[in-house]
Amino acid sequence: MARILVLNGSSRARGFTAAMIRSFEQGARQAGNTVQVLDLRTLDIHCCVGCLHGGADPAHPCTQRDDMATVYAAYRACDVVALATPLFFWSYSGLLKNALDRLWALAECQPDELHGNGRSGALLVAAGGSHPAQLLAHFDYLMLRMGWKNLGSAVLLHTDDLDPAAVTDVPQARSRSWPRTLPSAQACPTFSPSARQVGARAVYSGKPAKGEPCPKPSASS
Image 1 (spheres, helix red, strand yellow):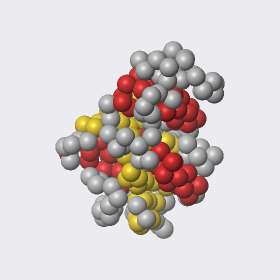
Image 2 (cartoon, helix red, strand yellow):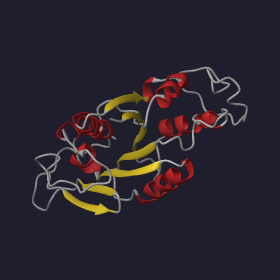
Image 3 (cartoon, helix red, strand yellow):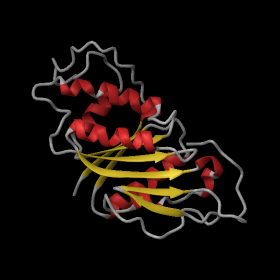
């Protein structure tokens, strides 16, 4: 059994990132794992000031005092960190990047609590278009530098063409094992999913099949 921490970097409570997290959480719990989801939009987390003075007090890894304390506690208790984000400027959302920057204080602890330590990482991405390659490449490099096992990425593409209310399940996020082969299943009845395996990545194209009706467009992520 793994203890999984999901860092939700979306500013929307009922967007596509949230739908991916729900599916991911369902599959993880069915496999016997525990899951804790932190919605970063609800936390008061200040920007990293780059002081390089973290780690002096293990009880408070960062020199700043804010809701990052909740993230530190959850991080210390987990085996797997799942990063969930909408695709913003071909990268992580600001909410998620801000929290990632603040995690650096754990690397300044003695011993280093950030790198290695037997942890694994996964990535969930909701993309309005079809170009998440830059973020996926960065995530692969991040896992390498962190010394974490890379469990892979799941991507929901073309969310600008989807109605978030119609996306009740995202199969590639629900899968019980990473990396894995994406099961043949539809994420919403209005669309015909097109799935392919990209390395350890499961990609779902949400674009409507030719001739099928298109729900009201939404930019929610």
